[in-house]
Structures are given as C-alpha cells and as structure tokens.
Length: 300
Ligand code: ASP
View 1 (spheres, rainbow, N blue to C red):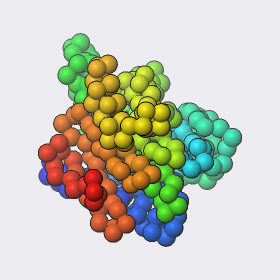
View 2: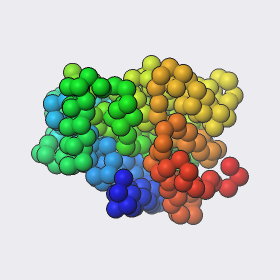
View 3: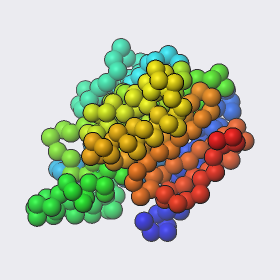
C-alpha cells in the first residue's frame, strides 16, 4: 500500500466508526450503526466492497453483503449484484421488508428498485488498482500458477462491522466484492449467515478471509456456538476458529468479534487486517498491520 492509500484507509475506518458511534449515542439500535459504518466503507475505494470491489473473471464487480440483528435473530443477505451502490442497504431491506433472508442477482436488483435503493452504473465500482489485480490474476491463470501464492492477494479488504447498543443488543454485518478472478457465479462466506456474519444475544462476528473455508467451518456461528455451548470466552472461541481450525483446513483470514459484555476480539493469521473500535467516549482506534499498536478497551 502507498502511504496515501494507507492514510485514506485509516481515515475511512475512522469515519465508519464515528458514523456508527453517532447513531448509538442517539439511542439508535445496533443494526443501524452496523449498516451506517459499512456504507461508509463501501463508499471508500480502499476496500473490497462497494466502490473499489475486486473484479471477477469476466471483468465485472459482483457484490455480496449480509446483516444480522442479534436481538430478534432476523437476518438479510444479497449476493451477485452489479448495480447496488450500497449492498449493505439492500441486505438490510431484505431483512426488514421481505419474508426472505437471501436474494441473488437480477431478482435482488428488482427488489432494490422496488425499495427505492440507489442503483448505479456498474462502472461506478471500478478502480484501476483492482483492474490491475485482475490482469495479474488472469496472467497467472494463463501460466498455470494460480491458487497458491496468489490466494492471499485474492481475498483482502472485505468490510464488516459489529455494534452493541445501549439496550445491550448486538448486530453484525459484512460486505464484499468476493475474490478477484472468481468465476461461475461463485459466492463466498460474506453473505452467508453463520459463515461470514452471525449475531445472537451474546455474540456478534464478521469474518474476512478465504471464503470457501469459512463456509465449510460455519465460522461466525461456530465462534458464537463455542461461547454458548462450551462456555468459552469470545477471545478463546474466536482464536480457536480463526487461528486453529481454519488454517488446519488450509484456509486463512481473520474476524472481528464483539460480546454483549463489551469484550472484543480481532484474530487474524494474515500479514494484517483492517480493524478498529470505538467506545462510548467516541475516540476511534484503528490499525492495519500485525504490529500496529491497537489499544484495547479498558480491562481487556
Ligand atoms: N471472504 C470473502 C470471500 O471469500 C473475501 C474477503 O474476505 O476478502 O468472498
């Protein structure tokens, strides 16, 4: 990353945290804060979500997102859309204004139109950096080198947010362009409730990483289930799934976790992970690389 990209990514994360915090400070529910924070990150070209999403094999941006309200257990998800400016808003509309949990492709875009959700020309999502990443991946495909050294670069920059509101309710959301050079309508873990996103009364999780492994591990749900059924702490449950189970299966990535008691966890087994948090004092803390100092909330 260039210093300018890094500064822009840190500024966007700070703005996302502040957007969520502002709503929570007004007494709004956790789902509102999650949706607002993610929309902020989708609008930034720095992340693999909304504008700046990675390209698929055909040179298109194909977007996935999901959201879950831990208090009600309701959830909404969309996959494979090309025109929805803020995919998290559409996932939210599926949760709030339909009888379904997941919609894909053209049908999801028809629903977006009905809901008055902003649609854009597909060229809106394009950035030169992502285009060059696709060219590199296509070249490696041709040389038969794909799927080993490149896999880490293929999944990076998915965005997620978690919130705990003043009623003690949790919510989680995730938004992504998926993996560079994906084909055949491939969908990763991010829009799959239980794999990339999960929230209940006790725990909220959003994952980022090599999606196929997160789907097989039902990663986000497994973290919360370890807390519920085994009595594990959030930190232990999250580290077990992200740093042990997923690498053991051959995958990699990270996750963010938040407990109803305010516990936070940011496990990852990659070189870095965009991450941050904001508490009631409204001071945002963000980090990118493994050795970036990220102060933890008091007592953690
Ligand atoms: N997990 C996402 C996917 O596999 C990619 C990512 O996290 O960057 O679609």
